[in-house]
Length: 458
Image 1 (cartoon, helix red, strand yellow):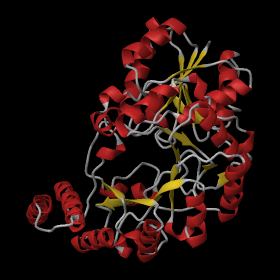
Image 2 (image 1 turned 90 degrees about the vertical axis):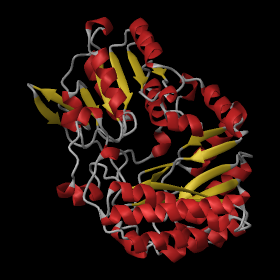
Image 3 (image 1 turned 180 degrees about the vertical axis):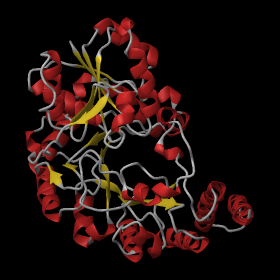
């Protein structure tokens, strides 16, 4: 076949994920692959997650595709660029390289000058279909919406692509193109249960300043509830996963859709235990009961901070007490909870961090994750700190995660702040405050506090 879809995430190179071992397949690529198949354009998918660059290159060398479409994001950008430079040689017949994904929208010139022939900006299905035909038939590219390319060493960016309005027109992801069993077995062997991903919506209507909406935009479009239940039924019969992860940004944004969805899941006998992400103000007693009835075992409820001041600076538009109460209610119903915390947001002080610690103690989520804020290009946060960026990075060999800007405190301060938050919260969870486990957490917290003071005074 003359068209190949691939990416550049290699589990064998990801030491952090090797400890977690919760990989998921490249769902976006599988959607685009399925769409082109529905248009009678055959294609291969080379999934790199459980493979290596050597096997990937051997596959490409043997297949000799004329067009290679690659997904790129913050995590994989560096490897993607290395791969482009390797492929743009005589050994691989100089295939046309097409890149898509959230990282391309605001790095157009950089990716094109790194060797990509075309960028697909925004949703990929229709654009990739039109672009592939133009490449194969040597047609004009200027009338294809949603792409960028170089012409006479100048960047040409065409009109934006109109987003899909009716998502039911999209075929289901081409999961048959890859070895799904590798994912199921990895989950099962490491966690005792297997898990798969499923998507019901595109876009997010909210305005959080640190969040990128580069692909699907600030919108809300959803697949029909009946169709989603049918997909769940298919997954249940074909793969029999122990759990599902709904990848939607705000799963409970529409209560009307959820009611229809629950009816369909029950009617079609499509229940699979699942977890999802949502916002606290889109939960209530009725919705929580409904979610539990159709198999929800964990809800991730975003807060980002325990300080209302920081939440407002983020434009999260939620009351921290509403978040806390939503987590507590969910816990009480027997559904696990998770929450996300971001430290180091511009304007955050030690007092705000203390409030975050208290929030986590009071809310008592089953799980929580902590990251130190970094500005993703194209977001409101990036625009706000743009003139305060202190790091000078080589674009091809660095990512937005490494961008440093003038914060309230130094980067090392926040390293120890993370330690303090974790150990203070875990100390509060210990049954006996005099146990060895509790004392270890308290000692680590005290040590982290001292180092925070040291780096604040530097």
